[in-house]
Image: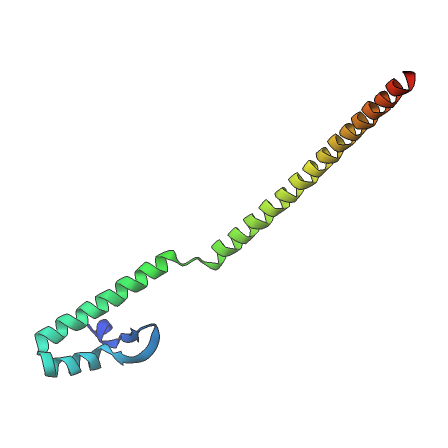
Length: 118
């Protein structure tokens, strides 16, 4: 084991709750008395590798503050564009409602005049 690995601290998690922490050196010492030095070294190297790999995987999916602020800005711009579109659609709908109402009034007026002539 190199000196960087010896200084690393392994945090053991069990069932999602914090179980405690132990240094790699202490873990190696405890395992070597029961399993032998070669097996203990292999096991601690494996554990360190797994932890390092897990951390690398997690750091790949983390977003930076700049990325989050860029996303927030993009969402604000999208919301602003949607509001403009909604106002335009509302104005268009009101225009067509008046056209419909005028057509209805004209049709009703024509029917009333037709009945009055008979």
